[in-house]
Image (tube, rainbow, N blue to C red; front, side, top):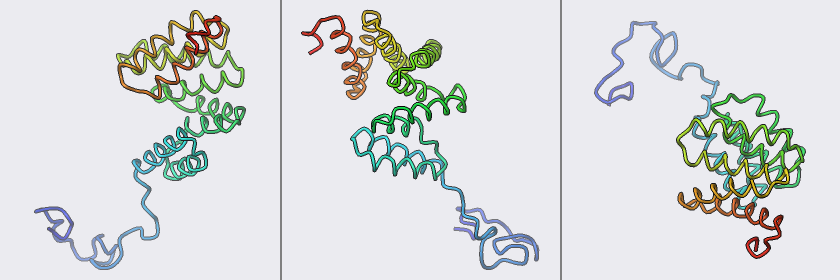
Length: 212
């Protein structure tokens, strides 16, 4: 190991008085910029966000909120998870405010997860116009992608809006397509959510045997 911490390659001698590990005056002591902590690595924020997602899906809402807060402190935007947490807690208007604000700020390449959450949240507060806009934008992104998962997310979003608009027949086609993908991809949580929507469509069509 060299004095600089790299294998086989040292930093070489410095002229006396040149900036180094000891600052402007020599080679000893404290590192430069002592007292200014290094920013947390991006993986720390993402890891906390994913932990929050797991807690939210398990129904551990307080733990989810704490994990989202840690993600935010580490520089990771805790959305859409935090908005979905508010929805799960019954604070749908607050969730809608969060997701609308986030959609105004986030550029198109990063909007997929936000759009899917927006459909769920805005449908819950009765904003079908906003939900339809989010579903249509998501459909446009899916049409330009080869990702089967993204296409299934779009199908489920479209089916959600159509069901809320009172068109369960059209909704069923989209939701059946989504359930097929979730089943093939072995994603049981997404499959269960889509299946619930299929059952709601069947119930609206008085097909109570299938809905059950």
